[in-house]
Length: 466
Image (cartoon, rainbow, N blue to C red; front, side, top):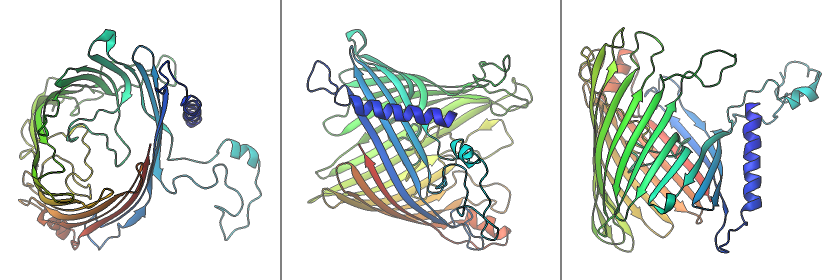
């Protein structure tokens, strides 16, 4: 029933969007309804990136996809509405026959074909199928813009929250996305913008239960608050930002409860963009986290949270016929060097978009991680670009105990990619990554009697957006 409802709403939204996309307001040049969408297909091959050894087989080839459809409505008095549905999965997650499978397809070739009993009923009810590609509401919000003629706007509902280089707030666009159930207020001044929000990442217990009089919602939920101040980009390409984020995890479903925590992230960032001329570009962001967490059998037993995160990139753009960018990077997320005390020092990257951030393989989380690297990116025509990158990854704090005692080298990686803007709406991308495990991984494998081997990832993607 849930799948049917989602699909019905999706079809209704698309049909409505197509019906009204030409409907217009009093301004004959303004469309009242606009249709947005995306179709992404990708081939993804990986080998040795889960066990880092050829002694065990972990290679695979899969074809992830993502399809989105959205309708954006513009109404009177600066009111907008936005609804977006998406489906994502991999090829083969839904069988070709959508209902009850009968006949040769899916049958045991060594047994007689069974006579279908009540097959019409079974097909209509999708009996026996467990689909992994359900349609979901990805975004759905109401926007109130320039309220009462002011510079203040408000967005209420499920929405993406993307800030800066997405070190802490990203949309996970390469995969399945990140959206927040939130209230977002924006004050747009001449030279800066201030965003203030509150979101509910998790409501517990569930607001709807199967039995009357069962569990009801309480205050032991997760809340996420934030304020982000962004100065407009200057003529020289420089921008500045400062922010404060408060993550309040109030879960206390059982004792001892090491999940319950509350911490604040204070941060600042600056960057400079440059293209079409020679010059230096950069990105620098620093975040400090402080708070406490439950570390004992009672809620009064607390430990302190203290962590830091830094990302820095410095480059030079050499302009000839096109841009040629040479850059270095150094990123550090703090780790905990002593798990026996009450201090928690592992950095929490919150809702980071990690794709191609610390290597194209996407195997590392920005916590207890240090990465430095070199890169060259070239725009060779109006439609094509390519690049190569080198990354060296290690733990910020040495491993204590176990086979890798005292080792912190995770590995090094070389990536290459090529992109072509086939049309204004269509992009083709291919990429390759080679990862050589370091001493920390090698020590773990050696203790298990396994060899240590390099891993690879190969990608090819076509993406259509409108």
